[in-house]
Image (cartoon, rainbow, N blue to C red):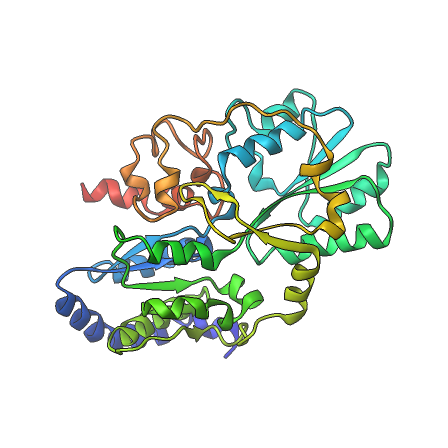
Length: 372
């Protein structure tokens, strides 16, 4: 099937008619709405944008999880990144979704307005080229992302070493997704009946990368992002619920292999090492992040550029920490769509295009108001 086939309206309707009895049956068996978490921020957008969330709503409560890398970045890391912009002879390079993330005292947009040299790039390779073009400056790339973006950043570090570029640095704040999902599974306060696992991350780590979660015996399905992907993934979760022993299901086989992308994983293992960083909302999670390997430490911004940051704090009332854990939703936050909007974000969940608050502001806010 080509991509358009996964958006086929008549086929989707036929599949939903077949799925409806199973949805109703499981709903009645459990005696409540089923709690399925979509781990990926792109899935959060897709469920809302396509209307699949609304169709499932009578039977399924879709909970948004820690699928936005900007949103789960700890406040201390955000403040450290902003601090680099204040350093003399430093050019900060970043993806655009970091620009409006609130730090304790400012954000990158404000620092650029104050004269800091901050440049938005669309790929890490552009940051490396900026370093080559500005040998008198120290160029720092803000490495925020999951397993999906980390390989391209690792490649720039490898090239910088091979090409002897001595003014390129990375602030590595990369996170690993399975440990966060495992943390949720270990949380007795959560009642999650199943997980829709991220397709993009799975392209890198493969189905095998999630197998450590199977010991919890909770249904989990790797999904694509089109309407038929979303619906059939939910149906697979329903079917897994009926089994005494559950395994990770791959419903994105057109892009996800059993062991993922071996070359990308090898590159990550060469350039980075696993460590235990702090996540927004989660705190310190064991072996849940990537930091720069000692063989590449000359490119590590943490170790080579001194930048003094303020004592970190979040905006009072911001619920991003609870939202990324799926403990609360945007409508539980008193700041949502009042003091906190995309034009004036008070937390990262309203900034990133993958942030839960940003998605709900765009697609769910008016429906929620009408339902009151």
